[in-house]
Image 1: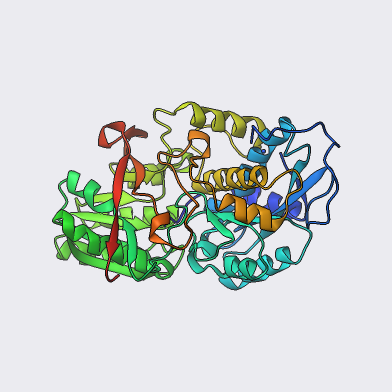
Image 2 (image 1 turned 90 degrees about the vertical axis):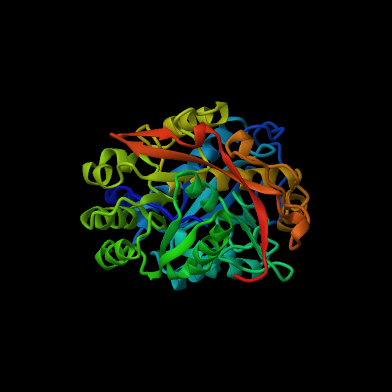
Length: 427
C-alpha cells in the first residue's frame, strides 16, 4: 500500500470551484460507434450519449499536496478515450468530490455519489485507501469502484495496481499474503537493521514488511507506525534510529513527511539508506529544500520515467495535451493513480457491453485475467478467482530509482524487482 505527496494550493482552489460537474475526456480501443448511436438505458449515469463517473479525492486537508490535482489525471485519461469516440459512442463525464482528507467525509461523499446519477466511482484518495470507509459504502450499494491500494474484500472494488490483494494487512483464506519487495532491495544495498515509519492506518502493512525482511537477514531495529498524516517533525525518531544503529529506513507517507524524516536523519548524522514509497515526482525536483533533504534516497515506483516505455510516453503525451495542471516532468502519484484507475474504469466499461449495467461491469471485469494498463505497469494483474489465494499473482514488480545531485537515476540495474508472493501465517 502506498501513500503519497505534493501540489499547488491554487489548483486545489480551482478544483473546488469546478467540482460539481466536470466534463471529461479518456482510453483507446472501445470499438466505438458513431456519436449518438448508443441506445438510451435506465442504468444510473448512462444515457444514449454519455456515461457519468464519480471521482473522490482529497482536494483539501493534509493529503491535498498530492491529490488536489488528481482529478486532472482522470480527466486526461477520459480525454484520450473521448477523442477516439468514447465508449460505444458515449462520451465520458466526471463528477468530482472532495473528502477533505477525512475518513468520515470520505464515507459521506461516497454515499452521496452512490445515491446520485453516476455509474461508478473512481477512488483516488489516500484517506479512503487507508480507511476504506467510502469503498465499503459503495460496496453496499453495488456501485463499481476502481482505485489503488484498496482492501479488495468487496467484489465491486477493483484495485488498478494490486488486483485481488487484500489491503492494509487483511487476511485471505487464513493467511496474510505479502509481496516483500522491501527486504530484497534493502538487502541489495547492504542494509542489515531496518527501521519503519508510517501512518497508523497502514501500520499492519509496515509491520508485515519488517517481519518478512527477516528472511533477507534484516532485523527490525525501530518502528513508528503511529504517525499522524502530514507530520513533519521526526527528531525523536531520528535519535532513536541512530541510537539503535539502524542502517536502513523505509517510510510510507506523503512527500512532506518523507522530507521531514530525511531532514531529521541528516540532522542526527545518520547514514542509513532510505527508501520511500513516494517522492518520485517533479515537485521534489522543483523544490530546493526537498531536493536537498532527499538527495541520495531511493524510491519504489510502478513507473519508470528515467527510461519510459511506449505506454509511459503515451500517458505523458495525454497529460501534456489534456491536463492543464501538468507542466511536464514526472507527474505526482495522485495524478498517476487517478490516470490508471480511470483506465481500469474504462476497461470495465468496455467489457460491460454496449448497454452497460453495474452488474455486467462487475461480473465481466471479474473475469479479466490480464491487465497492465496498456503496458504502463511492470507486471500483469488478474481479477479472476476473487477472494481466493488462486486470484493472487505469483509476483509483484516495482522499479527503483535514486535521487542524486538533482536528478533521478535508475537503481537495481534499471529493471523491476519482482517479489514473489509470500503467505504469512501471522502479521
